[in-house]
Length: 318
Image (cartoon, rainbow, N blue to C red; front, side, top):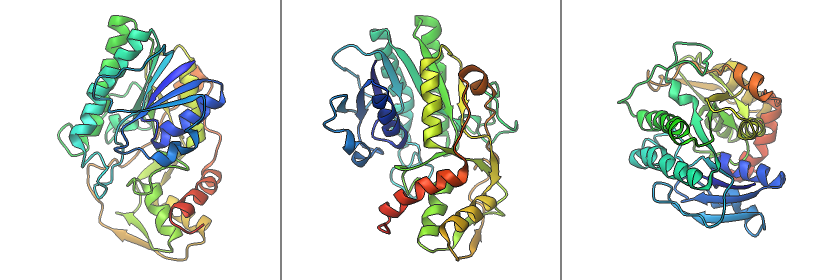
């Protein structure tokens, strides 16, 4: 197939590009480098199976030649308010990527009679009252808080995607992505894993918010990419959770990181950042298991050991 991937220079987009090219497809990458990194796709430049366009998906998209699939992954995704590239600090661009970008990429898919896959997120569940979260759960969301620009953009994108499927017959798919980690992730992302792993490698005390009792589940990027590609090849049109259902507290996670990095510094407990920060997050992956025959294979320790060399390199420690 010839496949357009928006956000191709991002963490997930670049890994997807690698995997699809490895499977024999031609990839057309698109990114405006607001949050994506040229480094993530530098190894693909010059590859005869990879073409790149620098473009903002909130503007009209034109790609010459026939496309067989469109994967829309373009969006700021960092929750770190200290980063200039976080969706907190790019609120309008984030909503435009989710709204106008989804509209434009769906238009490309419709014009090419191509299959379409939307990268949605577990953030649409908000601070969930259902645990673990099934795809049928409508969420407990704050539509006016600072996180809303990302959450609501993705919720709108899902609705628009299904509207195009029902009204125009576009062959659509929706993946709801849970916490993912691995090489090429942004060290300033603001999520628990890059924050804690970076501190540990620098020999610093690990910052734990509140008592560390809030939970997350972490999926290694290779597992996530495998689930996304299985969904792309499937005939499923309704949303599918892709993530690791193994849940752990942030305190347990911090202790595991210290163990693997031999960091002797203590944990540093600080006030919880915000009541709006989800306290529990864990996917119910029954649909992925049943429909796609997918479940994660890489355990946390193995995934961290694969990720640590990248972090060391970026920190100048390798």
